[in-house]
Length: 277
Image (cartoon, rainbow, N blue to C red):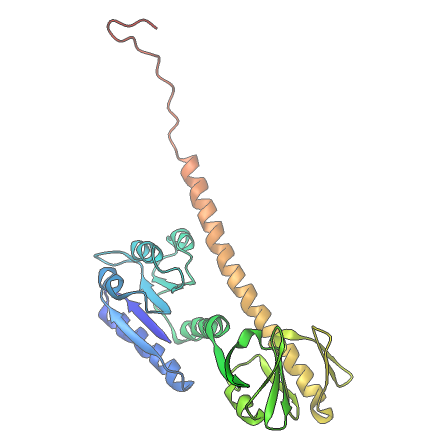
């Protein structure tokens, strides 16, 4: 993951990059972290970053204006604002900020944000290229519903079934970093996003297909489904709550502006020389 850190405070900038790199090292995930002292320098090379941690209060170009300029040509970069105040949550909402962190940024905050970012990047971009006959077939992971072993091949289901030339163990290894994929029996791997239920040692898919579950691990597998759904729902609710806070702050701020507007009485019409009213 390629991330930019924009902050005119050197010590805070260095600390954040250290936290980002440590997170990547612990999970053996490649993190490229580039530092910028102001928004102007960042904008000169932006467009190649998946996310930017952006300080709001900077002497030159502040974070909000930097984000507005970024959004003119880059709609995909995830913007994570950093600030000592909540006064700019409304502006953060206007530029579709991904998150809003209060300084000092902690390792716990980084853990939460990067976990969400990683899931977003995986869902939006991750894919595999597999051999099917004489063709190379790109398979988007979020659309891969299940994998079934077939000798030295695998049958995969996306919007259609395909037989690809790869052994099950190798494909299982390639998908092992994906939380959504679960091996429910020998030679059977399912995407939990497409599972309807796990009952009576049968895994029912949303399209109606059924697969036998490992009888000894049936309870554990069912619990894995419960945990996965809970974690996914919890992330969705957290994101929704954060968005709601930003929207509420924006509404209150706009309401405050209306209430404090000075109401001036209309002035009587004035006659100009040589004209009649």
